[in-house]
Amino acid sequence: MFLISWAMLLLFSSADAQTDLYEKQYFVQGGDTLPVRILTPLNFSMKKKYPLVIFLHGAGERGTDNEKQLFWGGSLFADSINRVKFPAIVVFPQCPAGQWWAAMKRVESKDSLGSWRIHSDSPMTGPLQLVASFVDTLIASGRVDTRRVYIGGLSMGGMGTFDFIARRPDLFAAAFPICGGGDPDNILKARKKLPIWVFHGADDPVVPVGQSRLMVNILRQQNRPVTYSEYPGVQHDSWKNAFAEPELLPWLFSKRKR
Image 1 (tube, rainbow, N blue to C red):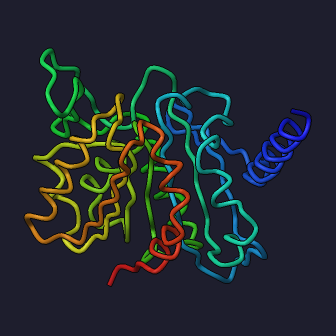
Image 2 (image 1 turned 180 degrees about the vertical axis):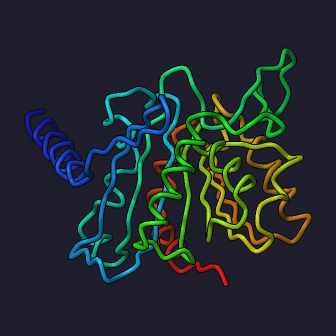
């Protein structure tokens, strides 16, 4: 028992050390504040331009502590090997409690999509608008390779990912929504050649797998470049499987807008 506890302690200590590499920042626009954690490349140079990765967390990581948003995914990009192989500016914004990355509405009847729907006919949510403005500010700094701007997210953040790529179709070079969903009437507004890798657990009780299947089927019908990984027996935590995919980061950072 001692050995198991010690191993777990080492694991969490390592994860904490990695997420500590993310600088705390706060983006203020008008009367609104967006907590943000930023990982900069090793040996950062003001003379270079770098890929930019935006990662949108799930509903459980909402708040204002500017810490919880790194709980899932933060250590992936902060891993020392990944930082050497894939130098990038990585941004983890935090959505306030009670708010959403994408405009969502609850429906009374449940079907294969569950009880939530994404409605892109509504304006972009306040938190996502702040993220968009912050990204624009980073790009304006001249340090971002605008051909290599990427976005991903899990659960609520997967929904935000689908929403963002439709609202800003010329911004992204690739996207990876995990256990999310989107507006089927809106997704084709995304850039036609945008590579998307979608992940979901087949037994997800929180966000039904039908949400991702619907988006993937629509994209495939239009011959869009979409890859789909569905994990049998996996419930809502399919991000663990996605982050363990050895080809995720090589795939992501190989994409460029042309």
